[in-house]
Length: 99
Image (cartoon, rainbow, N blue to C red):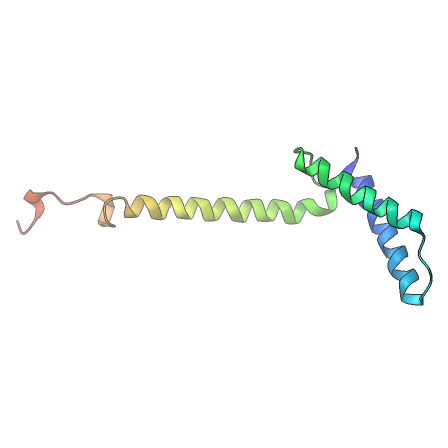
């Protein structure tokens, strides 16, 4: 399947249906069924690990980058808290107390 062609057709059909209903026209059952078919096909494609349509990728890539940054910050925070948050991550020993 070509997710770019699928999404393009979805958008064209959605705009046609929106325009028709906005004028009060009766919409084609064939167009509604085709739009449903396209939506379900793209969903199945993505669920099986297929790539996103080009139009969605910039936002998807941005979200992945933000998610990776948040995960790294959480890991860094966890490392700092490993020993109760002591400077340098070093837990003081008995010899370090009040000496």
